[in-house]
Length: 150
Image (tube, rainbow, N blue to C red):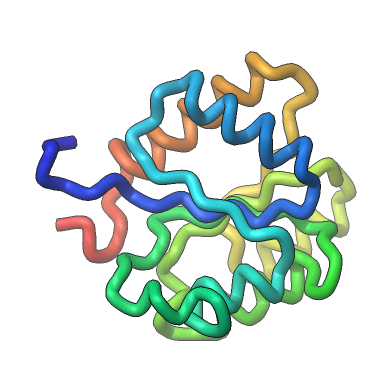
């Protein structure tokens, strides 16, 4: 990534403050070339993506290059948020990785039916989380071609 290129934004929707801190530390540890941002629930996620409420000032900012979404959040859970994201033509191209403690077959099948790009169970060890962040960054930002990346 050149110095003139702004880092890609990874937006993570996660209600647990400890998980946000672990993700931030893991992200820093793997030295990923992206800007990690957090929202705490599905409503805040949609406000960020639609540039509403406290996110109005982001109108000129690029959309996230990747969404990392927890399923079980207050106010609006990840399933509801995913449904709205994938039903909107402007937001649909943003890759969504569901990162959750759930491993239920119904959740896995359901999120793919809603249009998620990946389903990953949250790692239990910090080193696994660092490796996961490294793999996600490598795959989504260095391997695949994303819309608007040329």
